[in-house]
Length: 608
Image (cartoon, rainbow, N blue to C red; front, side):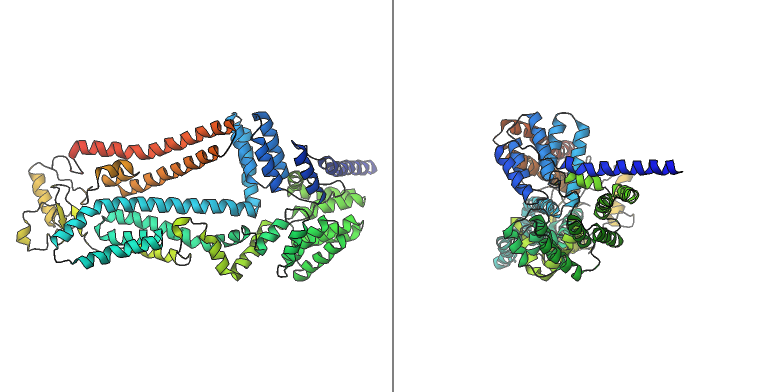
């Protein structure tokens, strides 16, 4: 029995020694590719930096001038210098994919997703790109369809004005002037006014597709404020949230510390000041700030861990262990309390307790955290300070956005693009939702004008606003007085039965056919689908085509801004893929339209 206990004690001692030996091994400095970068790295490391985005981006620029093998090494150094920066992970993934290493590329993509999930500043940057891209794509698609419908509706409007000669010219100006005025006020408002004017000239399916796009824009606008206001505050360097987020990652900076002192008192402010003071070696000042954060929130595990770290560094292991156990009580899922407590038990020679804490810390990925921060861990600091978590930073930023609603709304204006100027973010969702409701309404209203697909006659309501006996010259497709249903009780149904009895099957085509200029079909993506009566396919084609075009332009612009020829050649396949997607979304509609016109003209059914 005693021999078994000795074996267990030796095993725990070996595990503990291995755990303790990890810190000096990870304390080695990274070799930088140049003396300037090496000195910059040493300077930041001396002031206790946890990561350095500036150094990581400098390494990325240095990697672009190196051969492929050396480029991978420098990008790996960039991921160690700032493991929460997404860009070096993505560049490594692209480079490995071009070399055919699919497994390593997928691992790099996974690291990029992990960084994006755990870093609020990176989340804010990529959410801004995603928001601007989504708004731009939806707006351009909606604008493309509106332009095509405008070209097609011009002959209908001309027919209405000529037939109704009593319509005065000021009435026409009253319909056109608001659209132009709204467009010059804001392109989005002008587009909404144009769709409102064109709505009586559209088919029911077209109105529903436009309503779906307007509803998508309304949802994007409605979710922009409450969901992304905290992230917008993080991207403004003048806000308190951005200052505290920067203190979470940088080393001691006197200017940043002075800026944070101007932030209103809160537990996050005191913790950030404590982190900066601890990194410059002022342990007593850091203790004061940590106690102030605990006075604001006595159940905050982050402050307990960092305060216990101060006791550990001063050799008071009993109080340090008590602080870590308090942190475990309030945050049992935090790996910092278990990992640091295990290191404390090693110093206290309690190896069995240390083994238990090591196992629990391993289950919570404490080793992964040390691995991501190994470029900045010093030999004299084998324990880790607990930084503000993503949830805590976003909680502070959300509260600041509520206190400064006007400032947050002003920041979010730039997340939508230039087309949204002068349109308040609180008003735009209601405008899109009102237009979507109007377009998707089930009001039984006839279109003001349409082109008969059987006899190619432009017909409107006043053309058939005559007694029933006078409409016999109209074919069944032109007869707007006939019910829409195809039952045998309707006039259209009876005529269809008569034709079927004569051996001719009647296929009712869409009432609205294509009267747009011929050049519009070949120039605009989705125009051919709209001409053949498929508005949903037109919207999808325009969305995919414009999206591929934007991707190609962005990659081409990035290639032109890069001085290295190898980077330019590496971007060429991506530009080619974007061009292929654009063509695949553009050409099928033209092919189908040409086939349909060969069979029966402009929407004319065969045999009618």
